[in-house]
Image (cartoon, rainbow, N blue to C red):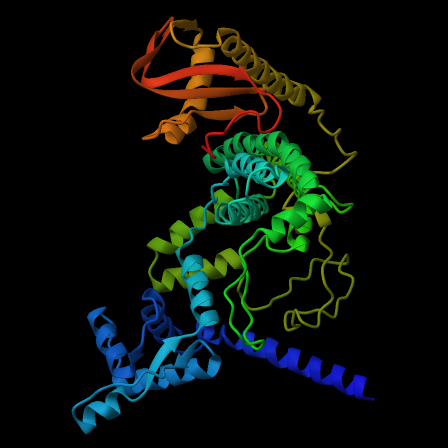
Length: 517
């Protein structure tokens, strides 16, 4: 009996807590939502803002929104009830009784209220167009995971807890930003592809965006996801994951079990297992596989729209041009003409039946019979749903996209081979001073050079930048007064104060990386 009573109490507490969290959203859809938004914006823009109703009203007037102090007081008290604001406990020094009454009620933004309002402001600032996908973060996730493995794998040197914590937080933040941006991008694709009015120049632009950008996203995911998955599986070995979690800094001690500290991501084994599952470490469908399925669906819908526009049966489904022309007529018409135009366009006339002779099924439907009670007229499905009068026969064959797929695969293979050839040329050169490189090798060198320059800036220690997919490392050794001169067919590259060389990528830990140098 006690156990059942305890479970019921816990369930009731959970329901109440959920209701309190839902109440935080109330000000966004309340009748005076604009007033509440303006008040919350004031409290959220400044850290630990402590304001009275009179001060809030004064600052709102400065921003062009006039609200008297009594109205602001009412709004603030309502926000306290919803949980977005909390009463301030700061004592106020005043000189008059009137000033005391004006400042006795002061407010601060609550933790969840401030977080919710920042999210709401971000959504309101967002555009309706496509969101750029942060695909470059996948390579950074792979590199950061490699650095974490280096730290927890070698017991001979002490682990820098602060550096390790920053790397762990960086992995989860980078993955979250990539996941959110790619989710928003595919949600935008889905919204556009379901439009029946997509045609003409807009369709051509969207087609180019879909074919080019989706291919880039898929290539980055295919290149980096297997490496990330392998690193996460290695890290989830009991000895390594325990070492990682044990060396992360502890949260600040509160001294009270009633105070719960919300920790940053990556501080539990479950979070690492969930991250690995997204990249394919579990039996459920992985994130990369979901992206590939979404890309195939988007391409299929794009082809379906192209077939609709190229159909030989007149306008097909899309009535975009007709609706735009009708909208132009409405825009230029006066009120009386607009009413007549609406009646003519949408058939908004009084119900009248015309008897067409003996073929009428029910001769009792006369001119005074309402459409509501009269027998419906059968309209062919093709005409009713697609506006198409063409007699339909056997479905056409599904187009074979194998040739296009082969072209894309061959192009990707040629790019990878050219990149490997440039890497082989760099490895053959070894020391780059006074070497002669092709344009492709020089471009690859310029791609690898910035991390080395950043790592050696202002220091004397050498640094390496690893290119795991090319199995090489670019090494930079600071040397004041010395140059690295690289000749090429289209010019000479000179690097001042740094001796550059390319070495084969050895086992983990043989060379210091640019990020850890």
